[in-house]
Length: 300
Ligand code: SF4
Ligand SMILES: [Zn+2]
Ligand SMILES: [Zn+2]
Image (cartoon, rainbow, N blue to C red):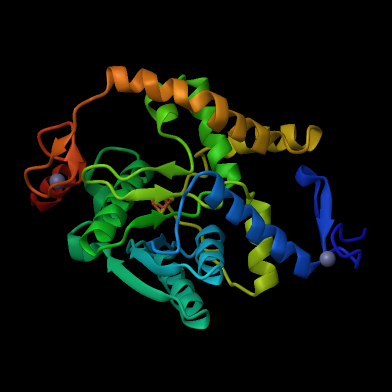
């Protein structure tokens, strides 16, 4: 197979884009997909001070690498979740990646907040991944606001986004459908959030890491049930195999034609948010979710 751009031997085939590329042209393809996402949805400017959430997985590392490579002002934030058998490796991979590619890195140790995930798992009677996700979202947002970052970038890829859209649609979850997308503008108490990799699949980010020489995490979290969206991802993969390009069309179609309607619907039904009296995080309850978890953790 030949590279579509330069006609050299191709190293990667992309049926979704009906094409194949050599290594050099693949990097150009990847860069252009990120640039298109940024341009189409006005995600970032060169003046932005960007905080990239880096887990040590392929997507967040590929994102940090690509944004730094495009000349953006990028700092990584890694949250050490204190999970035995996975957090240590994730932290090491993140640290050596940032050192190798000269990207500034901050590390937040969640145990210093009294929220080490294994301890939270023992005390909070909810699925741990939902609590862990809530804790991560809270601290990424808080860190960005406290340290003057203008935007938080996360490595969600097309497969993540399409599986989430499919799941939200199956449940007609209008609240989540109204704010799903690559851009969540800043609001009182929330920093702007962007997903510049939304046009690229898991395979494509893994391929970027391979070609650039980025080593990424393999030790899975011991609490992962593998359930979150995995079945939907498989279904959508089958669809993509039969109809290449369908995932991106489905997602872009939602952004261009579906999302506005859900936004209008939610504005009508919108819940009022007020600052949490303990920490200032926007909440519709008396105390925000994280302060409530902290209260449970403080009880002996
Ligand atoms: S698998 Fe669940 S508990 Fe483990 S890091 Fe991910 S969200 Fe947290
Ligand atoms: Zn080429
Ligand atoms: Zn709070």
